[in-house]
Image (cartoon, rainbow, N blue to C red; front, side, top):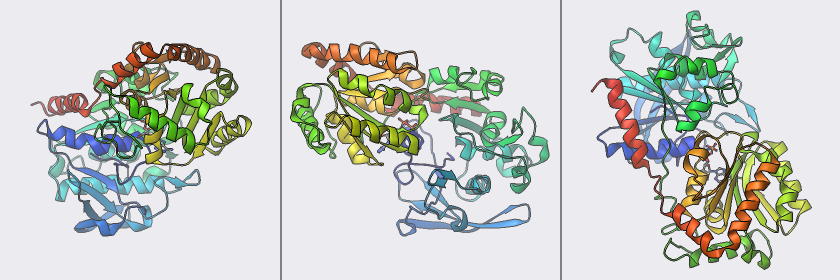
Length: 467
Ligand code: ADP
């Protein structure tokens, strides 16, 4: 697997969770998986073992010296070390601005991944994730096409979020030593730019995305970000496989990050979690018997932050409380800060990335809000089910695939009114304590573990190899 993130070492979102958990789950199906990620500045070299000293990578005449490290994980996790490119504060940029040499960074990364397959890990399939790995299929179809090392090797490209495409000026092609012949609409050309995600979409043997509904949605103009045509032309090799979640990390019975543990049989610990969460966010004790809404999210437009902000007044009118954790675009962080200032004691916000607090919100809230504009899969709503925190979601992508009428509340139109409509239904249902607890328990008993997803990926690998 070639990916720019893998939990726990490098994580900004769901991609890292997937790549961190899927390899171990695949072992149960007899598949040996190694993962390659960059060695970012935040990953301490002291915790790693150097396994390959000198892997020079030439992009044209420019030489990049890389070496490969390995982390002590359940599966071989290789890290590409190239300090001038990756020993930086951010993964993709800083203070909201992308690094100007991202096209070089993820070209060197892709070439280093090919090197790992040549020297360290015999590879039958490159499973490439998102645009940062998009050049692996592109190099395999061009410069490496006649290299005997990769004869018969297959590629699978998984789209975790089509909103991130890796677009660069046309001159990037020469910088990364790709031939001009790939600059065509059924190659990597995209409205006058070079698109790394199209390296995957056009050149991989098979494509997948992270839920069946998102696989259909991205073939439409509304969700396709201009790539719907390219995806429709490959519809025959595009599959949707729902992500699993790692219940070793996310189960209220065993979660050591919570003030109290609980289960579907004994929910009493959840009240303790709620009490402490209210205190932590400075919300009043009266809130204990009213619905507490939780949000953990990247604050971007994708996550529905704008309709949520516009619904703030309506939320407060319904006599409910809201705690939110997130970080992202300054404009949306500001939305939340303002809502908290306007409705003190009702809406409370922490800006930042804090895994332990994310767990405490999942456990302490009654309702989890995910009003996403689009959502390839989404993990938090699945965690919420397990924590007995009833999801209120927009019916899109993986949210639509994982939440049912019996386990949560869905709305269709992307508007504050529709969101408030679903919230009204949820707060009314909350009045019926017994009915509500039954709904919680139905969610808690559902199983979205990696087993089903790993089985689907494993079957796809076998199909690709013709075995
Ligand atoms: P995405 O990958 O689009 O960000 P997902 O729902 O698939 O959305 O995955 C988000 C993951 O990141 C979850 O594990 C969630 O708990 C975590 N997360 C998101 N924002 C924060 C935050 N501010 N603090 C802690 N964890 C966060």
